[in-house]
Structure formats: C-alpha cells, structure tokens
Length: 217
Image 1 (cartoon, rainbow, N blue to C red):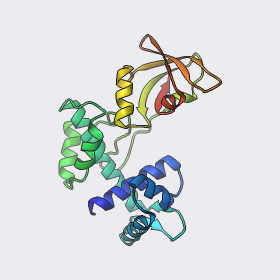
Image 2 (tube, rainbow, N blue to C red; image 1 turned 135 degrees about the horizontal axis):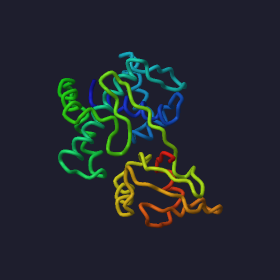
Image 3 (tube, one colour; image 1 turned 135 degrees about the vertical axis):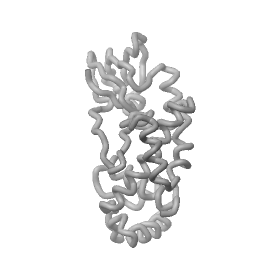
Image 4 (spheres, rainbow, N blue to C red; image 1 turned 180 degrees about the vertical axis):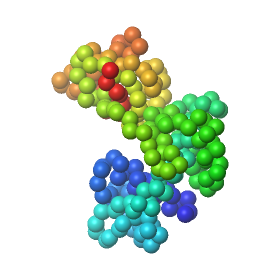
C-alpha cells in the first residue's frame, strides 16, 4: 500500500470505531482534509484491493482484510509513541506527528522486535489500546469524565482529544494517565465540573471533561 492508502484506511478505522457504523465519504473527507471526489477515487482503489466495502452513495466499511491492515498501522503508530516517550523522553504532546511518519515503515520484523523491546505494552501514552501482531486488543473499561456526577471518583485512563494543545493543558493542570480525579460538584447550567486532582481543587469546562476518559473506582 502507498502512504496515502494507509492513511485512508486508518481514518476509516478510527471513524468506524468512533461511530460504530458505516462511514460516509463526507466524514472521511473532513478527517483527511480533502475533497469528497478525492475520497471517492481512493475508495475505488481500496475496494479493488478488497480492503473496503464501497458502493456509490452508500456508507463505507472495512473488509476483514482492511480491518487487519488498519490495525497493523495503528499498532505501529502506538508502539512508536511508546518508544518515543519511554526511551527518548519525548512528552506525550510531541509524539503523535512523529509517529505519523514512523507508522509507514514496512518491516514487520522491526515492529515485532520493537514490541518485544518495549515489553509488549497494551496501551500507548494516551491510554489507547495497542493491537498485538494478530490485531487483538485489550478492552479498557472507561467512560467520559463528563458522565460522572458529584462525589464520584475515577482514574484517568485516556484522552479523547490527543491534540498537542489539549495535552499541554492537562500537563499544566498536572492531569495525566493514572491521575485520581474526584468530582466535587457539577453545575447544572453548563455542566462544568469542580474536581479534585491529587488533592488540588480546580474547575474545568464540560468540553474538557468530555475529552477525558476515566475508570470508576
């Protein structure tokens, strides 16, 4: 596959996971920041390779071959993120763009050795599951912090938004994977939260709470 084909497959995989349904060409075009006509051309190529199910004016889904191929791209991306954070001391807000480049390395042997070298991690630095060599992933129990109510407590296990700006904001507030977050109060007007993180109280918006995954404790 070309880099472009891999990027499209990964985009369809992420959209399918998020929406739990077939994906529209417009949704793919928005994610890829391109024209719908360009998406249609690419989908035809991917369909010819038995990577997607595509019919004009209908939704797009991945074939079994497409799902496995997409998971292997995601596997490479997330393993490289772990490597950059754990072995090269990059911060979690720096690694996504670099991993976008490294994920296109073709050597399966290299990726499997990287996986073993890192101790076969099951999650990346943002809390997302890493597929193993067969495409299997550990299911992580989680819900959005915005779904919690007063006096509930959760452990931060991931982020929905892994943009650099959001991750830097979390660093400023000393919120990271493993942080204990207690909901002190929830405003009925705008659903903002007053939370306690590692003993420190702060107020966060509903938008921020809607981008943090927690596991109830």
